[in-house]
Image 1 (cartoon, one colour):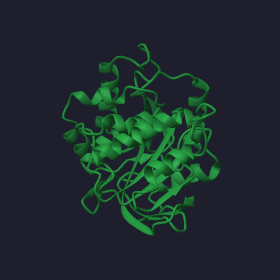
Image 2 (tube, rainbow, N blue to C red):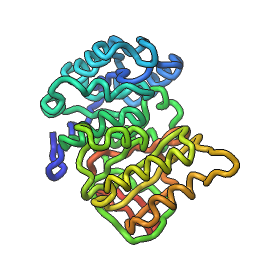
Image 3 (cartoon, one colour):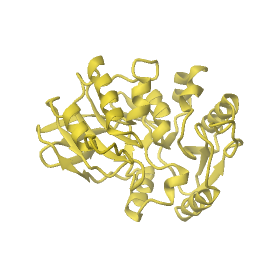
Image 4 (cartoon, rainbow, N blue to C red):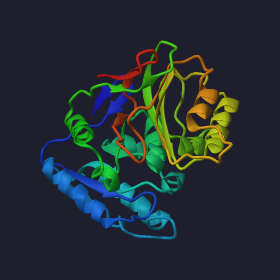
Length: 301
C-alpha cells in the first residue's frame, strides 16, 4: 500500500485478479446488467465474483444488516479478492457502519472500493481514516459507461495517471486539495456523524439524483448553517439529474449558484460524473487542482 502524503493508496491490480461485487445497499433490479458487467470485467482481464448475498432482498435493502455486513467483511478479508465494487446503490450502506472496528478492518485489508451514490457512506468512512477509494460506476451502471470512461477506470486500476476533466468554470481562480466526492443527499445525512471525514483543505465533488431544487436548497443551507464549507478549497459539481421542480421553481443551476456562488472559492459545474449519464471516476483522497476560471479538474499523481 503506497502513501498519498498521509493518505494510503491500495495496491493497483494485476491481470487475472479477482474483483468481488457486493450489495451493501438496495436490492438489484436488473440481473442482465450484471451479465454485461461480467463481460466487461473479462474483457479487461479480470475475474468478477459476487458476494453470497448480492441478490438478496429484505424490504428496500439487499438482505439484512447482518447479511450485508458479512459480505462486506468477507470482501475485505478474503485474500483472493483484490478489489471491491458495489452492485448498486439505493439505501442502507450507512447501517453497516454502526458496528465493528471499521478503522482497523479498512487499514488491515487495503483494497480498492468502487461505487457512488449510497456508497458515499463507505467512501467517506474510509476517507476519515485516509484510505483512498474510487467514486465511480457500480456493476449495474458499468455497461452504460462510454468507452473513454471505462478506459479511464481500468487504466487507473492498473496505476496509470488520470487525464483532467473539463466543465464550466464559475471563476474565483484555482484551488488545490484532497478530492472528496459524494452524493449530496447521503453526505448531508452523515454530516456531524462519526462517518464524516474532515472537510478542511478538500475539493468537494457533489452530485445527486431526483431531488427537487428546493430540497437541494435545503441541504446546501444546512451545510452553510453548520459552517461546513468554511475550510473547503473548491467545489466540483457533477450531474443533478431528475431534479425538476414546479413551474414557479428555481432551476437546479439557480439554486446551486445562489447557495454556493458567494463562497469565494473556485467552482466548476457540468463535470461528467453522477447518475443518468457518464460517471467518470474520481479517486477519493487524490490531490487535485480545480480551476474555476478555465473550468478544469486536474489530477496530481
